[in-house]
View: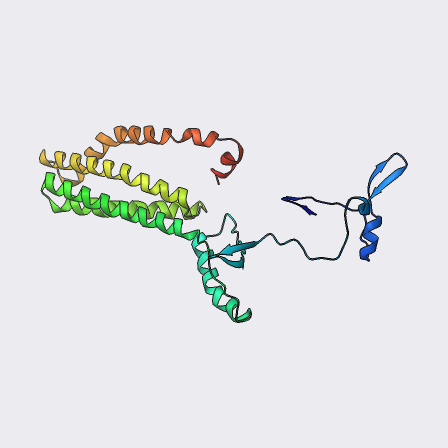
Length: 243
Protein backbone atom coordinates (compact mmCIF):
# COMPACT_ATOMS: atom_id res chain seq x y z
CA UNK A 1 0.00 0.00 0.00
CA UNK A 2 1.65 3.21 -1.18
CA UNK A 3 0.89 6.36 0.81
CA UNK A 4 2.68 9.38 -0.61
CA UNK A 5 6.38 8.41 -0.76
CA UNK A 6 6.16 5.42 1.61
CA UNK A 7 5.38 1.81 0.67
CA UNK A 8 3.56 0.19 3.60
CA UNK A 9 3.58 -3.59 3.90
CA UNK A 10 0.08 -4.82 4.76
CA UNK A 11 0.01 -8.39 6.07
CA UNK A 12 -3.21 -10.41 6.09
CA UNK A 13 -4.10 -13.89 7.30
CA UNK A 14 -6.61 -14.61 4.56
CA UNK A 15 -6.92 -14.63 0.80
CA UNK A 16 -10.24 -13.02 -0.17
CA UNK A 17 -11.70 -14.10 -3.48
CA UNK A 18 -13.75 -10.93 -4.04
CA UNK A 19 -12.73 -7.31 -3.89
CA UNK A 20 -15.57 -6.52 -1.47
CA UNK A 21 -14.25 -9.06 1.03
CA UNK A 22 -11.14 -6.97 1.59
CA UNK A 23 -13.32 -4.38 3.34
CA UNK A 24 -14.09 -6.88 6.11
CA UNK A 25 -10.46 -7.70 6.93
CA UNK A 26 -9.71 -6.70 10.56
CA UNK A 27 -6.41 -4.89 10.97
CA UNK A 28 -6.57 -3.92 14.67
CA UNK A 29 -8.51 -4.82 17.81
CA UNK A 30 -9.43 -2.20 20.40
CA UNK A 31 -11.12 -3.92 23.32
CA UNK A 32 -14.17 -5.72 21.93
CA UNK A 33 -14.27 -3.73 18.74
CA UNK A 34 -12.30 -4.17 15.54
CA UNK A 35 -10.94 -1.72 13.06
CA UNK A 36 -11.47 -3.04 9.54
CA UNK A 37 -9.67 -2.19 6.37
CA UNK A 38 -12.70 -0.24 5.13
CA UNK A 39 -12.30 2.12 8.09
CA UNK A 40 -8.87 3.33 7.02
CA UNK A 41 -8.74 2.74 3.27
CA UNK A 42 -10.77 2.56 0.11
CA UNK A 43 -10.45 -0.85 -1.52
CA UNK A 44 -10.70 -1.08 -5.29
CA UNK A 45 -9.29 -3.15 -8.14
CA UNK A 46 -6.24 -1.45 -9.59
CA UNK A 47 -2.80 -2.15 -10.90
CA UNK A 48 0.38 -1.97 -8.92
CA UNK A 49 1.73 1.52 -8.34
CA UNK A 50 4.35 2.15 -11.00
CA UNK A 51 7.71 3.12 -9.52
CA UNK A 52 9.92 2.78 -12.60
CA UNK A 53 8.48 5.65 -14.61
CA UNK A 54 11.15 8.16 -15.65
CA UNK A 55 11.72 10.98 -18.11
CA UNK A 56 14.41 10.56 -20.77
CA UNK A 57 15.14 13.66 -22.83
CA UNK A 58 11.78 15.03 -21.75
CA UNK A 59 9.86 11.94 -22.91
CA UNK A 60 7.99 9.42 -20.79
CA UNK A 61 9.92 6.17 -20.38
CA UNK A 62 10.13 3.05 -18.24
CA UNK A 63 13.45 2.02 -16.71
CA UNK A 64 14.40 -1.59 -16.03
CA UNK A 65 17.41 -2.04 -13.74
CA UNK A 66 19.53 -5.16 -14.29
CA UNK A 67 21.45 -6.24 -11.21
CA UNK A 68 24.32 -8.71 -11.46
CA UNK A 69 25.56 -11.19 -8.89
CA UNK A 70 28.99 -10.73 -7.30
CA UNK A 71 30.41 -13.70 -9.25
CA UNK A 72 29.33 -12.38 -12.66
CA UNK A 73 31.43 -10.18 -14.92
CA UNK A 74 30.11 -6.68 -15.47
CA UNK A 75 31.48 -6.60 -19.02
CA UNK A 76 29.87 -9.95 -19.91
CA UNK A 77 26.51 -8.85 -18.49
CA UNK A 78 26.52 -5.54 -20.38
CA UNK A 79 27.63 -7.22 -23.62
CA UNK A 80 24.82 -9.76 -23.21
CA UNK A 81 22.26 -6.99 -22.71
CA UNK A 82 23.51 -5.16 -25.78
CA UNK A 83 23.05 -8.32 -27.85
CA UNK A 84 19.57 -8.83 -26.40
CA UNK A 85 18.26 -5.32 -27.15
CA UNK A 86 17.74 -5.94 -30.91
CA UNK A 87 15.76 -9.09 -30.10
CA UNK A 88 13.60 -7.19 -27.62
CA UNK A 89 13.05 -4.44 -30.16
CA UNK A 90 11.57 -7.00 -32.56
CA UNK A 91 9.00 -8.12 -29.98
CA UNK A 92 7.78 -4.80 -28.58
CA UNK A 93 5.44 -2.52 -30.57
CA UNK A 94 7.03 -0.51 -33.34
CA UNK A 95 6.56 2.81 -31.51
CA UNK A 96 8.48 1.57 -28.45
CA UNK A 97 12.22 2.24 -28.42
CA UNK A 98 14.53 0.13 -26.27
CA UNK A 99 17.91 1.64 -25.40
CA UNK A 100 20.69 1.39 -22.81
CA UNK A 101 20.61 4.36 -20.43
CA UNK A 102 23.45 3.51 -18.06
CA UNK A 103 26.49 1.31 -18.71
CA UNK A 104 28.40 0.21 -15.60
CA UNK A 105 31.02 -1.53 -17.71
CA UNK A 106 32.46 1.85 -18.72
CA UNK A 107 34.19 2.12 -15.32
CA UNK A 108 35.63 -1.40 -15.64
CA UNK A 109 36.82 -0.80 -19.20
CA UNK A 110 38.41 2.49 -18.14
CA UNK A 111 40.14 0.73 -15.25
CA UNK A 112 41.52 -1.92 -17.61
CA UNK A 113 42.70 0.79 -19.99
CA UNK A 114 44.36 2.63 -17.09
CA UNK A 115 46.23 -0.51 -16.01
CA UNK A 116 47.44 -1.12 -19.56
CA UNK A 117 48.40 2.55 -19.91
CA UNK A 118 50.34 2.53 -16.63
CA UNK A 119 52.06 -0.71 -17.61
CA UNK A 120 53.15 0.64 -21.00
CA UNK A 121 54.32 3.99 -19.62
CA UNK A 122 56.19 2.36 -16.74
CA UNK A 123 57.87 -0.18 -19.00
CA UNK A 124 58.88 2.50 -21.50
CA UNK A 125 60.29 4.88 -18.90
CA UNK A 126 62.16 2.20 -16.95
CA UNK A 127 63.48 0.67 -20.15
CA UNK A 128 64.73 4.08 -21.27
CA UNK A 129 66.40 4.77 -17.90
CA UNK A 130 68.06 1.33 -17.83
CA UNK A 131 69.26 1.74 -21.40
CA UNK A 132 70.54 5.25 -20.63
CA UNK A 133 72.32 4.34 -17.39
CA UNK A 134 73.63 0.86 -18.20
CA UNK A 135 74.04 1.26 -21.94
CA UNK A 136 72.94 -2.31 -22.66
CA UNK A 137 69.87 -3.54 -24.52
CA UNK A 138 69.63 -6.85 -22.63
CA UNK A 139 68.63 -5.35 -19.25
CA UNK A 140 66.16 -3.15 -21.12
CA UNK A 141 64.48 -6.16 -22.73
CA UNK A 142 64.38 -7.94 -19.35
CA UNK A 143 62.60 -4.99 -17.71
CA UNK A 144 60.19 -4.58 -20.61
CA UNK A 145 59.16 -8.25 -20.44
CA UNK A 146 59.08 -8.60 -16.64
CA UNK A 147 56.22 -6.12 -16.17
CA UNK A 148 53.61 -7.77 -18.46
CA UNK A 149 54.70 -11.23 -17.26
CA UNK A 150 54.18 -10.17 -13.64
CA UNK A 151 50.74 -8.76 -14.46
CA UNK A 152 49.87 -12.02 -16.24
CA UNK A 153 51.01 -14.03 -13.22
CA UNK A 154 48.80 -11.89 -10.96
CA UNK A 155 45.78 -12.48 -13.20
CA UNK A 156 46.44 -16.23 -13.16
CA UNK A 157 46.59 -16.19 -9.35
CA UNK A 158 43.32 -14.23 -9.20
CA UNK A 159 41.72 -16.85 -11.44
CA UNK A 160 42.97 -19.71 -9.28
CA UNK A 161 41.60 -17.95 -6.17
CA UNK A 162 38.26 -17.48 -7.99
CA UNK A 163 38.54 -13.71 -7.76
CA UNK A 164 36.96 -11.53 -10.42
CA UNK A 165 38.53 -8.67 -12.34
CA UNK A 166 36.90 -5.59 -10.83
CA UNK A 167 37.73 -2.00 -9.93
CA UNK A 168 39.56 -2.98 -6.75
CA UNK A 169 41.71 -5.72 -8.29
CA UNK A 170 42.55 -3.54 -11.28
CA UNK A 171 43.44 -0.68 -8.94
CA UNK A 172 45.71 -3.04 -7.02
CA UNK A 173 47.43 -4.10 -10.24
CA UNK A 174 47.96 -0.46 -11.19
CA UNK A 175 49.58 0.22 -7.81
CA UNK A 176 51.68 -2.93 -8.06
CA UNK A 177 53.18 -1.75 -11.35
CA UNK A 178 54.99 1.07 -9.52
CA UNK A 179 56.43 -1.33 -6.93
CA UNK A 180 57.44 -3.76 -9.68
CA UNK A 181 59.23 -1.02 -11.58
CA UNK A 182 61.27 -0.04 -8.52
CA UNK A 183 62.25 -3.63 -7.72
CA UNK A 184 63.12 -4.40 -11.35
CA UNK A 185 65.34 -1.34 -11.69
CA UNK A 186 67.20 -2.14 -8.45
CA UNK A 187 67.64 -5.79 -9.42
CA UNK A 188 68.94 -5.04 -12.92
CA UNK A 189 71.36 -2.41 -11.63
CA UNK A 190 72.71 -4.75 -8.93
CA UNK A 191 73.21 -7.58 -11.43
CA UNK A 192 75.12 -5.20 -13.69
CA UNK A 193 77.31 -4.22 -10.72
CA UNK A 194 78.22 -7.85 -10.04
CA UNK A 195 78.91 -8.45 -13.73
CA UNK A 196 81.29 -5.50 -13.65
CA UNK A 197 83.21 -7.34 -10.91
CA UNK A 198 84.04 -10.05 -13.44
CA UNK A 199 81.64 -12.69 -12.12
CA UNK A 200 79.97 -15.20 -14.47
CA UNK A 201 76.40 -14.36 -15.46
CA UNK A 202 74.69 -17.05 -13.35
CA UNK A 203 76.79 -16.26 -10.29
CA UNK A 204 76.21 -12.54 -10.71
CA UNK A 205 72.43 -13.05 -10.86
CA UNK A 206 72.37 -15.28 -7.77
CA UNK A 207 74.66 -13.01 -5.72
CA UNK A 208 72.73 -9.89 -6.73
CA UNK A 209 69.41 -11.50 -5.85
CA UNK A 210 70.65 -12.74 -2.49
CA UNK A 211 72.03 -9.31 -1.70
CA UNK A 212 68.82 -7.33 -2.25
CA UNK A 213 66.10 -9.90 -1.60
CA UNK A 214 65.70 -8.96 2.08
CA UNK A 215 65.71 -5.14 1.61
CA UNK A 216 63.32 -5.47 -1.33
CA UNK A 217 61.01 -7.75 0.66
CA UNK A 218 61.01 -5.37 3.65
CA UNK A 219 60.29 -2.36 1.41
CA UNK A 220 57.40 -4.17 -0.29
CA UNK A 221 56.08 -5.36 3.09
CA UNK A 222 56.17 -1.80 4.43
CA UNK A 223 53.95 -0.72 1.54
CA UNK A 224 51.45 -3.57 1.99
CA UNK A 225 51.16 -2.95 5.75
CA UNK A 226 49.31 0.26 4.93
CA UNK A 227 46.34 -1.79 3.67
CA UNK A 228 45.95 -3.93 6.81
CA UNK A 229 43.47 -1.52 8.50
CA UNK A 230 41.10 -2.05 5.55
CA UNK A 231 40.55 -5.63 6.69
CA UNK A 232 39.18 -4.33 10.00
CA UNK A 233 36.44 -2.23 8.44
CA UNK A 234 33.00 -2.71 9.99
CA UNK A 235 29.50 -2.37 8.66
CA UNK A 236 28.60 -2.61 4.98
CA UNK A 237 32.07 -1.47 3.85
CA UNK A 238 33.72 -4.24 5.89
CA UNK A 239 31.35 -6.81 4.43
CA UNK A 240 31.91 -5.72 0.82
CA UNK A 241 35.71 -5.17 0.92
CA UNK A 242 36.84 -8.83 1.49
CA UNK A 243 34.49 -9.98 -1.26
